[in-house]
Length: 93
Image (cartoon, rainbow, N blue to C red):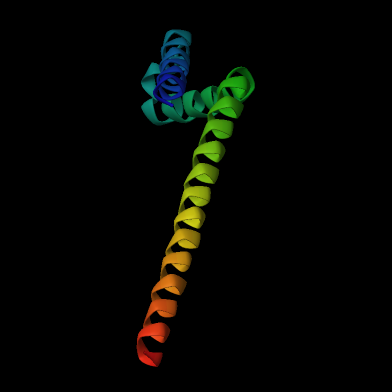
């Protein structure tokens, strides 16, 4: 994720420098807006594979957390039912 962010920032600063060299240095607001727009379009096209890979990793991590939480819940339910069974046996004795 850090690599993706660094590449996006490099693309932004590259376009900022390019537009500054072209002559937009007298209007900083226009310079930054155009650099942001150009870098977002370029990043979307050039970094698609990296973004898809990062998304797949995040989804896998989320699914692993959900599965771990669900398995803990099943274990806790089994322990609770065992405890309830022991309480019922103690009451009948």
